[in-house]
Length: 481
Image (cartoon, rainbow, N blue to C red; front, top):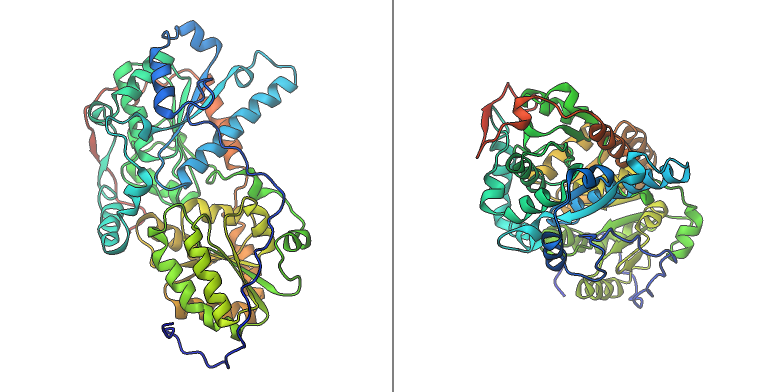
C-alpha cells in the first residue's frame, strides 16, 4: 500500500476487521414523480412524449378547466431534478389540501402537475450526467471561466427562440398541444426552452425560474421570466443590475425535500445506523451517481483516513452511495488501518435521518446538497477546489459563517481537529446558517406559481416579443466574480 501523503505522529493501531455494514432506518425512499405523467404506467420518456404528441390537442376551455403545471428540469446531476420534485410535491399538496377543505373548484384542486426532463425532448437525446462529468479534472477551469465571466457583466442574455428552433421543437409542439397554465424551470436549459415555446406558440402562461445554486448564471432568460425565485438577497442583488424588475424577484430559498426539514430523534437515528451515542459523528457524503466529479473529494478523504487514529472522540461515517467498488475499497482501507472509529455505508435511503445523527457534514458545495444540510441543521465542511456555481456557493456560505471550507487533505484534517477541540464552532455555524435556512421554499414557490396563474397576463412587450436571440446591456454588476 502506498504511504499516505500526510505523516501521522500516532502509533499504529492493531489491524481490526472491517466493520459490519450499519443498518439503515426502515424508511422507504420517497417516490419521485414520474418524468412524464401520461397515465401510461412504465412508459419510457420517449413513449410518453410520443403519446402526448399523438393525443388530440387540448382546447382553451379544456386547459382552463384542468390547468396543467409543468415543472421542468434537466438531468445534469441530481440537484435540478430534486428541486423539481420538491416543487411538484408542494404543488400537489396544495391541491390535496384544497380538496380536503371541500374547495374542489379551486385552481389548486383542479390542477395537474407533471415533472419533465427537458433533455428527453431534444433532437439529440444525450446523457446530461455524463456531459456534466466532462467539466471535471483539467477542463474545470474552462467551465469556471465560462460560468463566472461570460454573460455575467454588462452584456447579458435575455432569451430567444433559438433554443427551440435548433434543439427542442418537440417541446414547443408539446406546449402548443397541451396549453400549460404555467411552467416552472429549475435549470437554465429548461427555462430557455420554455421561453422559446411561449414565443413561438403565442401563449400567455407564466414562466417561473428557480436557480438551484446561491448565484444565478448569466444564461437565465432574464427579460422573459415572469418570476425569479431565488435563494437569498445576495442573488436578488445580482438580478437587479440585469434589469429584472423588483416585482419579478421573490426570495424563497432553494427547494429541498420536506424530509430534510422534519425533526427526528437523534439517539434513535444513531442506533439505527449503528453509531455511538457518546462521540462527535462526522458524515462524509462521498457517494454520487457518477464518480468523476468526486475524484478529488474521495482522494482527500482517503488521505485523511490514517489520521482518524488521532481523533478517538470522533466517528467518521463515509457514504459511498451506489458505487460498490468504492465501498469495497473503503472497507479494505478501514480494515488495514484498524480504524474502529470509521463507519462505511453504501447507498442510504434515509439520508435526512442520517444527517440528524451527525454533528457535522463533509460535502461538496453543490446547491441542493448544502441546502439539504441547511434545512437539516447540519454544520458543513465544504471540501475541494470549487469552480463555477460551486465557488459562488462556497463564498456565500463561508462569508455568512454558515460553513467552513477545506481545499486540501491537510486543511480538512486541521478543520476536524478544530471542531473536535472546540465543539462550539459547529454550533456557531448552525446559528449563522439561520439567516440562510428557508425550509418552506417549495411551498412558497407553489403559492407564487398559483398566484401568477390567477393574475391577468402582463402586457409588457419584453415578456411577449418574439426574438430569435436577444442580448442586452445591463448595469454595473452588484457582485464582481
